[in-house]
Image (cartoon, rainbow, N blue to C red; front, top):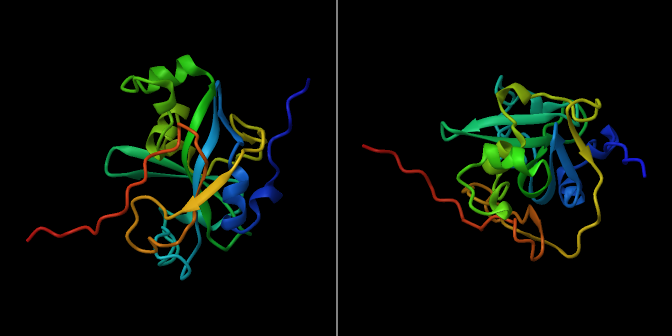
Length: 202
């Protein structure tokens, strides 16, 4: 049986609130490693979503989030981790979906070598930084086109069972927006942790 074609650009050229739940069960591939997405978060754009990196406008760091759709937005956080997003919406309108968690379904040995601290396979991509690490995604992948049949692609997967939604993890602004989506009962879904306001040292 032939493998299905990667998701087309038109799939991503939509509202992140539509794309996010539709990504659950899809396969994100980078080289030998495949991750079945089990948890994602939607982020809207400038002036719409105070938790979004593009809320205050376009910068060199977030430029990829302004399109075209179907590209990776990879950013460095807390001085030690990368996180990956899929850009949505028409070019010129910012928005995307953070890839929060998934199940490694191919390339287990490679993913294990990248995540030696994970004692269980269900933890290899359980969380956005772990997911990016298991897939080997880094700064050089920022702006990579997932619709160009390159090393990084998104393949359609099996439809998940029940999909739940709730507040996003670790954000303080826009924290009540129920824009996190996950597959009910999947053991790879990350633990929910509400955001804590940052305090300045005096």
